[in-house]
Length: 599
Ligand code: CA
Ligand code: CA
Image (tube, protein in one colour):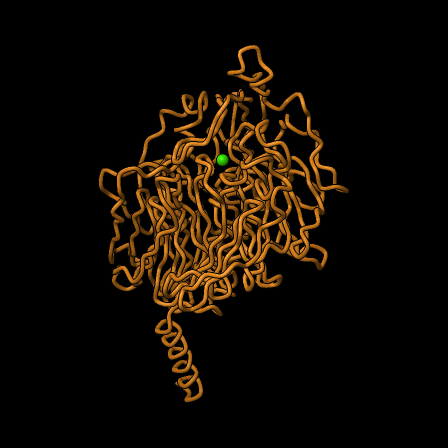
């Protein structure tokens, strides 16, 4: 071996070893979307594009994509598995239902350790005992639990390094989202919008869990910042007190940040979607009810709201605007795309929040005829809002309306993907409606705070789910793949011109990103309601997805829940790689090209 080559190899080996020994850094997180040997954040990069440039697995080679290993979450605890695995230093960190986490050898699936959070009686998750994943920072892996706590574990041992309480389960709080690390801060939201909690974003020191700032997402509440000693000082009220809420309803105003957020390096802003204003009965809270059903952009340095765009002002349908805001480049400008539960896809300027485009991504929308691009506001259909109970004969039930989408949404928690190659968003959409009516309600701490009743209804008996490739510029659906059951898992797109997504029927499947032609599918044994990931190690590309049917549909799905009640529960993670791709020092890519050419 030539001396200079040898020294190069030694340098490379040291650099690689050094990076591992130092743990996960801000610099590594900042370029997570382009480093293909790891998946350090939910969203495969904090922007949330869920795009990997990897292309060893592509439309030509995918016929040879086979299981490498599978790992069972075991036990009697199954239910919905909505977690995105993280990959670092040859390890997979994956969370499961009931606030559990495992560290596995990413290559072999061998179990390294397990953490089972001790959950108290009285947890109040609205929509199944799910967890959507963890965050990595330094030598820690951090996740939130159903009893509204944050737990940081040592990546090597699974030992608890720190633990912090977010809030009281007795007041309706819980936690299910993957935490976000941005600019050296741990950013988290809260769940509990159905219990009249107060939505907010919290920033902590990821190494210690100590609070840095709190920003409420309900207008009128005070924000706070904290010094190193933990002393709390006021940091400005969110919005203008009394402006968009009548009376005292803002005090229990909801707007939960239950899906967590995204962060864009170019704008320096973190984007959190907010849920419904509480209660659901909109007649009790005339006004826009800021900052509910919105995208809220936060300056992470100051903890201030820089801009807010409200997707559904004065929501009356539980159209949580909690969906992810995914930033991308369009015509030299930084934009953000959001497929909202209310059935419209929005494109906003990521720096200013200005609405650039809005169009429906589902076929039936009853509550508005469109979004006015000049004012940014929806054109409501007033008669399609559920009626005011106080206007009825007995004052106990308002008029029932049929509304589409249903409150389970044109899209719900299942994250979409964006490909900078095709410039298309891949949206796991659902076509369904609901009968909904309002009832009187008063707030009681820890009790469901809806003031509404509902039944989910099918619209098209042939299918509910549809994976749609959407052009954010034209608003056109370029292709779609329909699915019998509602889609509840996320999407991955790759440089191999592929789109991966799972179905409740149990398949992980892949389509040609340009045409939508399904080119591969594999039965995982239970329903897939989680987003796939991909990474490479030793010259091999791996694809992984968690399998385990559950989530909100079987619990709240009405007629749809009955339609899919044959689906079986589970709890496992599957990992795939190309048959014949060997670990020999990067040679496998070439070998695959030869094999593909020989076909
Ligand atoms: Ca990466
Ligand atoms: Ca809600």
